Image (cartoon, rainbow, N blue to C red; front, side, top):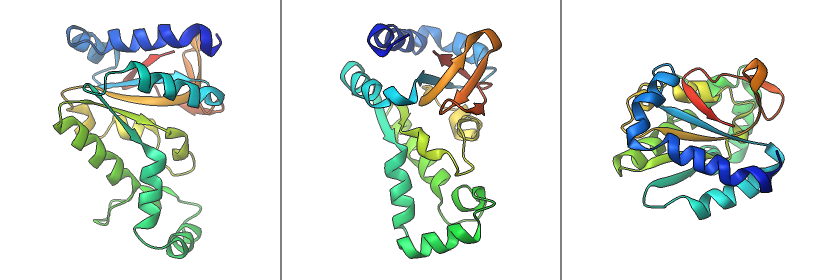
Length: 187
């Protein structure tokens, strides 16, 4: 379905899924998860983000731009330092972007922002998630994080993807098989 035809229905379905009286059903449908994947074609991401920002109440939602967090992560050191480090670990990018060491990485920045939004009693909404491709971080890593599983209000992830209903298949960026286990999908 084209953007002009389905964006209103999708946004309405998102609002309904997030109503407080639907939270128990969300957790059941999401296999105990607390997340919603709001899917849209990657080629229409800018259109969807514009409408979402217009139609969702800023008193209820805060958008977290993952692309901005990636830039912040790179800027923690210099570009040259990041490039050198990345090239050293290019076959294992998860060691760069979501390591277990104490120094902050991209995953830590994402979780920190989700926590800040949650502490302000708002729904965190991740956008520009396509930049995660190649980092070793995927939606499942975020949805399975202890903090996300315990959120009072669900996490929404803007997800440039294709959902194939008859096979219950989700393709991140229209080609990478993705998990929809700990979430519900707004298609």
